[in-house]
Length: 254
Ligand SMILES: NC(=O)c1ccc[n+]([C@@H]2O[C@H](COP(=O)([O-])OP(=O)(O)OC[C@H]3O[C@@H](n4cnc5c(N)ncnc54)[C@H](OP(=O)(O)O)[C@@H]3O)[C@@H](O)[C@H]2O)c1
Image (cartoon, rainbow, N blue to C red; front, side):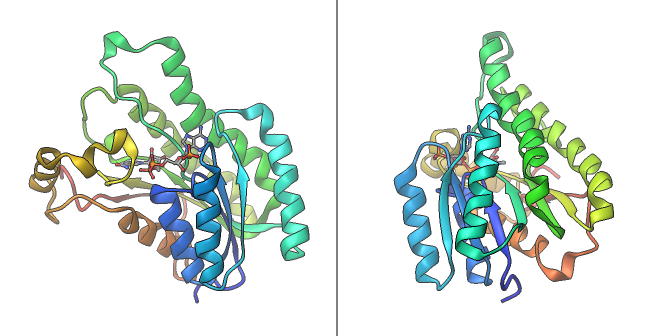
């Protein structure tokens, strides 16, 4: 029960890494604001699973690319904090929601480029800005980057670059929020078998074998591997860790 009586907001928590993180935090005693972009029914199912664990959860819609809606989203968060928990603030923000577009350089359109910047960088920046008054002092922010900021993966130039931007942003936020005791770190997952990239890793045995062969721990990750690291980072034992990039990849391509 290391997260007892804490409230976490996890973006993109209806499936994949976000869902696993929300469930692990709930198992550890936290209550959760689950956000989803388009799959409300999945988010409702996660809320049900968290309730079955004896914790409280609410699902809110959020498109992290739609900065114009962040004001009303923050108002909705404030409203549920008051009505559900009788609180003015929450403790942990996990910026997880996102998608990957893999395209060769010559095929990238400006629209596709902007979409990745908006989801993974601009959205994270302005969401943090809007939610800051609702994050408690001594709270924590965890951003989610990617192993591909460190090693090359074909057709991921834009995706990896915007994830790199979030890693720099993490260090700046750590500085600026340090005086409030808020820690800000970034988790960089390796290859994780989720719906990501059209579920390629989950379904393609050849890709699975290749990932295993270039990973010291000899396998690809599952969402729970990443959730465990995020949850640990949010634990009381890690209160003096801030501004750090922590890769959770089984040591892929070391
Ligand atoms: N899987 C990997 O190999 C891997 C590796 C490195 C980093 N990551 C990062 O890990 C994070 C989660 O990935 P995942 O593997 O769990 O992917 P996933 O299973 O495909 O889930 C993606 C989640 O993000 C949400 N989402 C997508 N677009 C969004 C938007 N515009 N606004 C808000 N939420 C949005 C989705 O919500 P809806 O279902 O409602 O659309 C869903 O909850 C991402 O930031 C990704 O870049 C993943």
